[in-house]
Length: 465
Image (cartoon, helix red, strand yellow):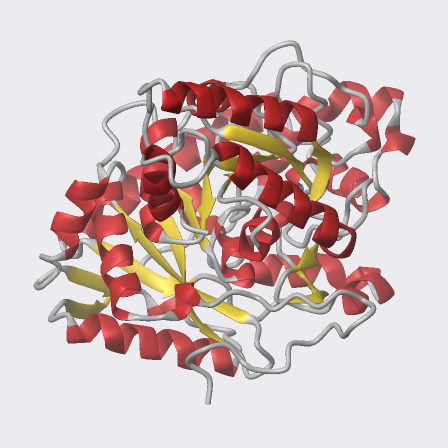
């Protein structure tokens, strides 16, 4: 289910947007009861949009690669006249009056909207097991988490319920679920994609970006949602053929610590593939800022009135996290924002010696849902570990992508993370594309078994021996 190939078929009228939309809606109807990816499915309006796209294309008015392609949105992104819940009872009936900026951009590109996707409540977590609408399940094995907070978006893309999704990322909420679900997730440079109309978690750290099945599709979607000068697919492909000599920084201290053995092995093998491209790999050291007080303060600022008026409508763990920001003073917030800007200035020096940084996306494979729900005290430390490697890149505001690089022997996906200097999405995407072209990991798809059959796939994905 790649956008590039399908959009060419749509352009040539070999396949109809209506046909594509009906297929996706049928797959949602079949698999959403198992995966719980969608909170709201907009079947009627999606079919109307598909018919309108078909009519335009038949009239010779093809708008580009997203025209007539069914995609979906994390339910944190405002949509006019369609409820946007943030997966919370606080907003279960909230219906915005206007679209978020990113929705306007994708509508202009002619995409078809299938609905709104489940997430970790108010995006305040990395597992998507805390939601008013129930936990999200991983498409590769529904017994495991899909990651978070964009868990519904990642699992839906992996399962083929939509061709792509748009998510948000404050501490890794695009890249971490992308890694755990075996797809591509791009967090652009801070501010490269407008967050207006997106329910905030932390305005200083929030990013908006695509989740797709391939790097190519991430380029196509990013190009249509970015505010200025995103790289074209031709530019990315041209750069990817010239990665020889690219300086690859490997920050082993911190980012390669506390790794699961299978994750460590998969990433080392991925670095070996990158080395065969005659790139220059070198170990580097970066200072990682781990203070989360600014996120806590900004989150509490958004939720203050609801916490006071309707605290019972939050999931208990979400309320606990929000309240951690209650005592942070205005003076402290000024100091914390200044520290954030200093961190963003300091990281620039590393790019005098390297072009990109490469790390494991997530240190561990996805945990089982039952383990987290049976032991609630394990949720917070587990999520901190899941987001350990992604969070620093939100602090730095750097363009960062997660791409599939392997599977565990249990058949659960593993991801590799590539980051560059602010505004260097072209380099980040070029290396990601070159790696994708040299491997087969992104071509795997989960074999989802319905409950009446079995919850386990009978064979391991390609590349596992």
